[in-house]
Image (cartoon, rainbow, N blue to C red; front, side, top):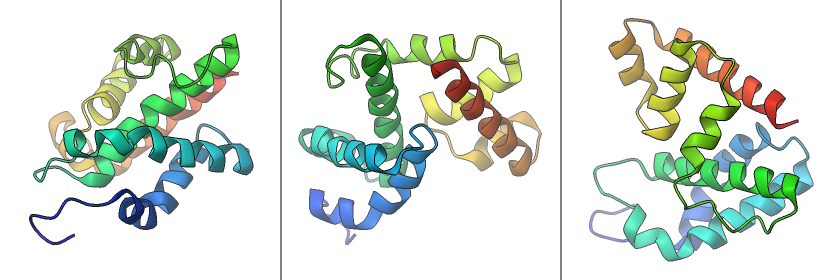
Length: 152
């Protein structure tokens, strides 16, 4: 993206939809349902483009953080029959995430918080923890598996 230009929704979709689709599949293994949610993610984020895109941060990181909020809210609302688009911006997502990680170790919860809640880079988290990036990735994958188990 050239400096000084705001990306368009279509441009973001073309560039990042494949990566976000793979990410959504970690939570929703059904490809058709995940594909429908991917379209919803971009539709829900369209009004947020100016607010969300900061030239000093990664666009993909922002998209992933926002998509995660939407996916988890979708799954939560799907489970209790409420419309999925309500509640994903209400701040309750942090409490909800950690309720899904109640059985995780403090180290797992810290890694999850740093990577997903605060959007930190994996290498940064690895450096802060004194562990290598592969170890941090493993902890994150274990967190995602635990979240998936607790959603079911």
